Length: 209
Image 1 (cartoon, one colour):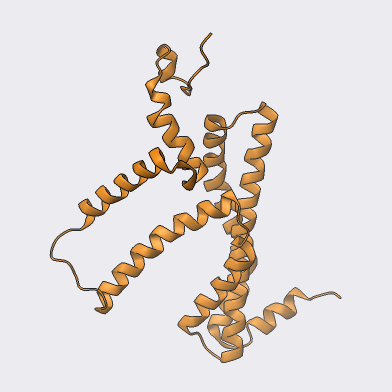
Image 2 (cartoon, rainbow, N blue to C red; image 1 turned 45 degrees about the horizontal axis):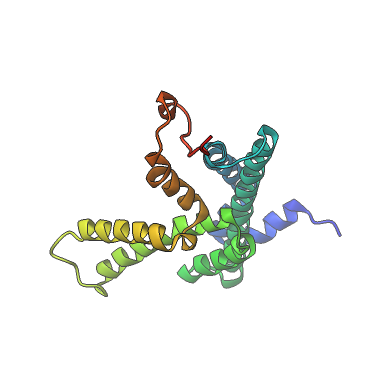
């Protein structure tokens, strides 16, 4: 059954300026977020793959392309889903409400980022820390959390670094794989000295001859 794009836009935008704004920009937003995903994932995948991944050049390039495609596609599809559900709720209820954002993102997140894989884990962990910080600040603004008279940042920093090194030394499998790789390079591979090339290329422990 064919679907008219014009009909969809007319339906989504028939009630209110907000709904019209959402519908008019859906296609543009999709490609905007797809290109954004490429820009942020491709450099990261390139560096991490060539630093920590073994295999042939072809395998590494395939891994980079796959990670970039997956990240970009999920971001683009998520924002398309989010904007569409926002417009739909606004159309049905005749206005916008704060809960619309949560429900639209909840459904989009479940559909697009619900699979437990490395890329989704990285995105979710990136968001988790920022959401927790934002909720704490919101709690202070609303008066639910008392404002401290001293700066908690140094204590927070010390606790985080203490915990991450303790986990790395004694409970390493609990850490995210890319963090394990980075910390192994920093705290274990750095114990090995070969020659000046260690400063130019990735230094990795080599088996003794």
